[in-house]
Image (cartoon, rainbow, N blue to C red):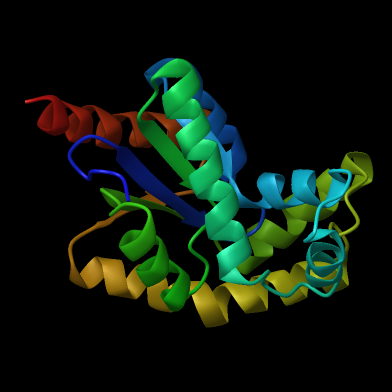
Length: 201
């Protein structure tokens, strides 16, 4: 378990195609955060030779289901520990996680309590348009209309309760992700500047 006063974690949530990855890359460059994408960690793990989780992850991704949280939490914790040991970095963006209520509770109990959740709010219509466009060049098997609809439904069913839970604790910072990338990032910077000033104070 990491110390909440020492290790700074922001959960980053938003529907598939809401621009989380792009904004996390900006934050990483400008604020020195370590960007941990739950999806990327799982994709890397399924490619890793000898991974015990390989088949399980592949099946979940193909069917648009959520990978068992113990797997994701273990991969996140390992990556955080490596960043602390190797580079002394202690600020983390956890992108695309937690996707369910039990994941949120388990992560905060086993790893560290989050500072807040950055929520990129975007309509289904906008997300579908963006992902189909991305699918033309990304080569990702889940950028097709059926998978997109499934993923958005899964997000609505499982991630909204997480956002509501943190809203009750005043730990959600909403961003209007319908805007262009530059405008979205200006809103992100405002939130981060205030939060990091408080944590450094």
